[in-house]
Image (cartoon, rainbow, N blue to C red; front, side, top):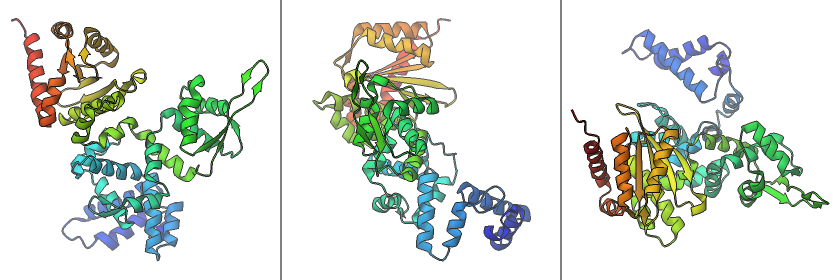
Length: 432
């Protein structure tokens, strides 16, 4: 029909109505026309026709393959994965399953929102996309995924997807700039960096460019590096960079664009962990692993009380990633912003609490949550009480003893928060 009536969306809409909806005698003509219009809008949203009802390049390609269902759905499925956030959608389901979380439309909507992908309440978007991807074999039934089919359709491996989705903003900007240049010859690495900075507004650390950008991209197999030779009196020349055969722009650019939409891609490994895995790693002798586990625990605890993840504010590189701060928000009844400080240390001092209090002015936070694997000093507690008494801030302290209780029964975090809220209320009690 789109091929026949292309350029006349009224004619297309009428044809759709006559063919598919005029038999709906239980509703009036206005609603039947609205259903036809929704069909047209769905075709626009999926990239099959433009606003004037003309077939797009994708639409024409599908039209020519209408008698070859296998090829038809493969083309359409790959388009959904690469162009319509399909990879993020499938990866979200896989991550939930890896964390032993039940997958349903409500839970999936919350998780996608955590990732920075807005899904309206009650929307059919996820169900519709799942059904289309089932046609091509990515979904086997309901939420079961054929991961082999998924990666074969994309032409990628699970490791490549993970690496792309977790690239830093600097790495993404650099690789996108190389794609924009489209030159397979060697280029000075510093010139590419300058262009990436101007194009994408990313500030690079020139001295650490090899360590933070070039080496990771080389190790991932996307670029080759050749060290420049020294010039007399001017030090070493920059690396010469060139793209490899793995550098497939038709796959790379769409996946990087999807990664750009994700908030805190660095928390994906945390979302894939179950409570059991997190709590097991919390006692690891490896300080780095234990620190990441504490971050994961803090994330899970905040989601248990239905807060919305916003961002990872700071990762302490000097401590091997052991100390991180998370930002969460809530819009239930009133807006509140929560900043979470994780301390993988034996002792939380007054200075630790004071640092977070100072940051609330910049972050405009209402609540500070200190999550520690150790004990909280008396001076720190007295200082927290003083701050709560003199301001509108609420400071929640979760220490080692609380974590041990949560290990046994995760939902007891509600009891911990209730205890802390009652404590804050007693301190802030009005003297009337």
